[in-house]
Length: 390
Image 1 (cartoon, rainbow, N blue to C red):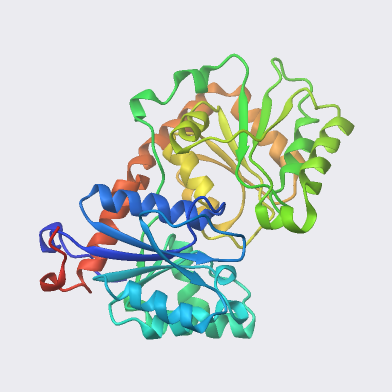
Image 2 (cartoon, one colour):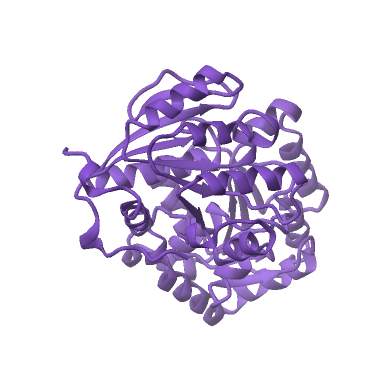
């Protein structure tokens, strides 16, 4: 992994281009790009965003968005590269499904057309890639000047499965908005009725049905914990299947006799409100079916809010919770989920210890700390003489 230069070696100001989906689009990459860009601007740097049109429809451009990349249009790819090349460095968010072409291979043409250094952020590193996915990812990493993965697991997977120059690769964690640790509620740990929370865009694979089944095994607990499922159906899932998954979950809660303790909340919350909402939970539950997930923004947000986490054994959870900030359970196992919830609800010392470890980890996950690492990384490939005078 590359050595990050000391703070003193960094240009005073940088003009940073960013290619990503972007709010109000609903997806994790859009949220990531907006938060990272906001923190970079707060640090005094200029950020130009080229927004990816993934076909879901875009609002009119407003700052910091300066251009759109329309998938499948070669002229738009060239224009996006030209706009990003006006900056000192380009940060490219990579996920196969957001770019045009087979397995998003249009991004290769864009990267090749850049005339400035590039940092590619890998949000997905398949454990079992198709041959073409492997070729695309290797080519992306070959062209990029630096590659960012967000976990040690991601780095190890890239090293083991892909032909990538490891000297280019840096591990920078996924950032999170974080409330003041002093305000992380005593009420969350000591609340009279335990509050369990899962949040995010809904769709098959989230594993929420397993928590509903687990709740039916906890009927003896007094007071009964309340489980809140917060979020709307993912737009792409909704476009294909409507609210089928949400409706199936609601029906499951009624069938298992826990409809009065499982709450479905589709309220909109901005970042500040959502952060307080998460911090008020007793425990965050992430029952994902995926065994392949090397990065979870929701997991990072939960730890940054000082919340203990019960999660299935997807790679990022195994890594981040290994020091004691939560409990890892097998996939698709309601009994194991129920046992973990019972520990969190009934053993106040264990819950307090998990919360304390989450609070200890939290500072390293703040967006300000993450943005600093991106700036240090870019300083190694962005000559000071080309930095922007603001």
